[in-house]
Amino acid sequence: MRLSAATLDRLPAGIDRFGYDRAAQAVGIVHFGIGAFHRAHQAVYCDRAMDAGQRDWMICGVSLRSAEVADQLNPQDGLYTVAERSENGTRLRVVGAVREVLVATASPEAVIDRIAAPATRIISFTVTEKGYCRAADGTLDPALAGESSLYRFVAEGLARRRAAGLRGVTLLSCDNLADNGPQLERLMQAYLAARDPALAGWVADHCRFPMTMIDRIVPATTVEDRDAAQAATGLRDEGMIATEPFSQWVIEDRFAGPRPRWEEVGAQLVADVAPYETAKLRMLNGAHSAIAYLGLQRGHAHVHEAVADPGLREMAERLMRREAAPTIAAAPGQDLSAYADRLMARFANPALPHRLIQIAMDGSQKIPQRWLGTLAASRASGHECPVILTALGAWLGHVRGDNAARWGAVDDPLAGDLTALWQGKDALQVATALFSPGGLMAGTWQGAPQDLVRIAAAVPARG
Image 1 (tube, rainbow, N blue to C red):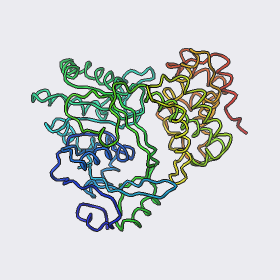
Image 2 (tube, helix red, strand yellow):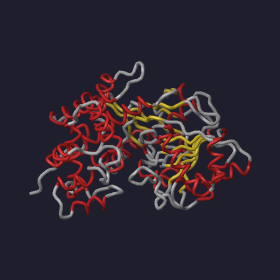
Image 3 (cartoon, one colour):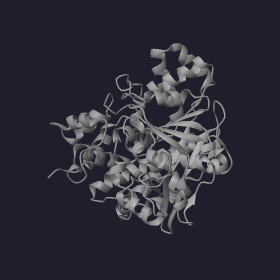
Image 4 (cartoon, rainbow, N blue to C red):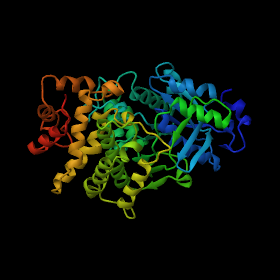
């Protein structure tokens, strides 16, 4: 029997669940990219807020292309289970914050109608780095920002709001992008300026784009995860997710209108997100990516296995404490050493196997903010980053296809370009083509000759 509104009363007494009347709550948020991370993070904060008595913050989830999450959640009336796992055991909670999931390509009018609805006050996003349709220089790529991109649906929904005389909305990026709010605003305005300059002006006057920092480790859900949840609850849940107990959400307090009081259920509303975001991108995400490529190179499958490798653990510690942390201007009370301690403990959590190949996806989109920003800041202060240069070599080996035999083809939007780059070239030539001035990925940082030599030396030799 499957989890749904009709079967909720069959849950065992020990399973936590929401206590609010879902039918009495209006949809206040339209969320693009309703994958596992959103369901473990923002949706949980909304669930807790409504449980605390706040009203009308149900979520309409939007998948831009795939029907997978719609097929998981719609037959369950939007309900799903979050399994928080640690060495102390597993805590289960059924979350009720999702009203529906729409597939944009199949139901474009329904998506636009939701954005234009008077009750909608926030449009939020976890579409990953590639969902922002950026060119290599960070500007909007018109070829990518087409009819199936988030920009088309948001623009049409906002145009209807403007025509109806409705108030603006908050557009809330929850992705791992440096300056995610300003980036979204810049890209959205570029899209609108080319199509509807009057609407661009209305958005500038009536909408807001706060910065955020999001943090929770959410591995891809497995069949074994679903089987374990079913054994505990007695109900099949195709939309369940497993995550860690830790969760952090730092939000710039700059909204266009009403918002949930997320700060009452664990979020931090601040004037300046930048120090938290920079620490997360350069320390957590930077170490995660290094562990992924170096760990795959050494034959490890999961994060907790990789950090049990003494050599990799020492490299991750060095990257966080000696390479990334010195480049961060910490906020008052932000203890970067304690943050590194907490990160290493989270990485080592054996109850939450996090696949390295999942972290290794889309590296060309991730490493500019995870590694290259640290390299640029370190050069300005006269420091070196040997771990990051070594990790870049491991990444070059990964995109060459070194891990493909065991883990499958490289999953990266630039996979074709990177494969072509390796044709007839050695490691130093590839590193030069990517990171020297004018290179394919040289926007944030350009490698000096000695840097390029160190990167190339870290690329595994092919037998």
